[in-house]
Image (tube, rainbow, N blue to C red):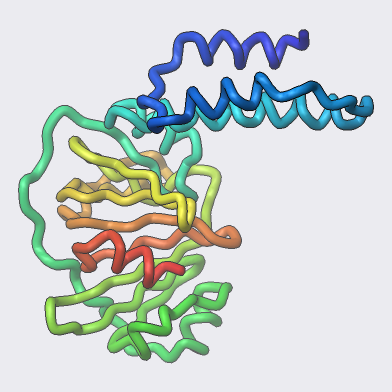
Length: 229
């Protein structure tokens, strides 16, 4: 048994795992009771790796049980240019996100940022677009308020620190994270100095092709995920 396998098994024995679905144990026992099938050496190797990967998936699923552990997982993944930090308390309300301040065209924003920003088709042409090196912000005025989408290139150190105190939910559909409650949005300068920018409301954060996305102003998670796809 390799050291990696031993470590994963040790972690598996100590991990807090959610209850299994009804009937799963019976299905596993039925599968075990089936007659053995002769396998080649290659089949055996693939089976061993599948087992290890499945164990790792269980460990990650168990890590998404409580907010403090969710924060640790988020920091481990780094969520691109965003770091999630769990704090004991925080704000209970948040204003709507500010509109972007610029009036750039998408071509101008691409030139200024150094990458082509993504525009959700369902939102249409943004009302405001601002950009600087490695960063683009755009906003829309909707019937329920301002929707703001920020896009920035991931760097070795996070650009934003989100200080949350209740829920941080992993969203498998887009491999992102949903911050469901108000939280402090802190800007971390390259010097390491932290500056509180504002209180942010429900926000969806995900990474795609080296770019970190922050979608704010959409209070429903399902709608935010739909826009992010």
